[in-house]
Image 1 (cartoon, rainbow, N blue to C red):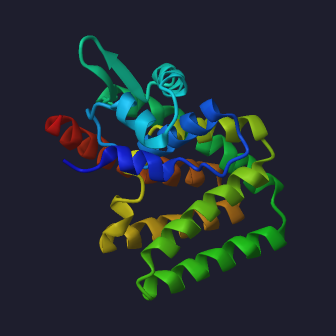
Image 2: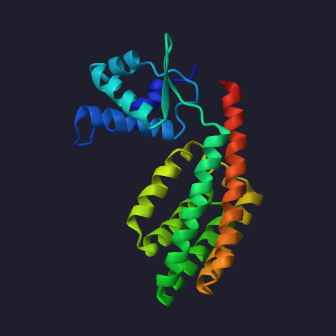
Image 3: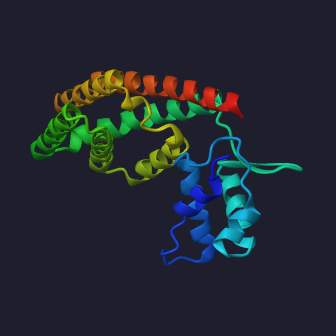
Length: 232
């Protein structure tokens, strides 16, 4: 069996100037969200505590917090496992995300200056260059920068906070679809379409492109989730 506890320990940053319980919580959470601990795997709190040379109390507290966040679940007479994500959860999250992304993009395009649109274009041209050079991680990072640019220019901090929370639940499956060359090309084309629709202040086109873009992501994550759940 893979060393999942070792992966959790790697994700636990002991250099953080945080209380022990926060440090443990952050490490466990990061390991789960990053996909280092597979769905359905039992988290051995004793082994984790022993290898970290800490008591089990902060580990238990962290797992309780993660249970409230729906990232883990307690199974009687078995222990705590990384929780499955079901189809209904994903559909609900994406329905909310589409609505919020459309709102953010609509607001951003009304507030952005020509200089900011030029910066967005430069970012996409850099993404094209990274894609031509086969720098997949660079492409993924720039896609994130593109979304961040929209959210920042929307001037809606509460909306950004809500979107970040929604996306966290799906980060276990992030980036996988973009690693396929055909999908990466299509995603880049979609980003160009969003940019042009924003620059033209075309609300209807923006909404249509975002819905199509996120629909593919939703379908992919449902398929990946069902594969993972079958292995549990």
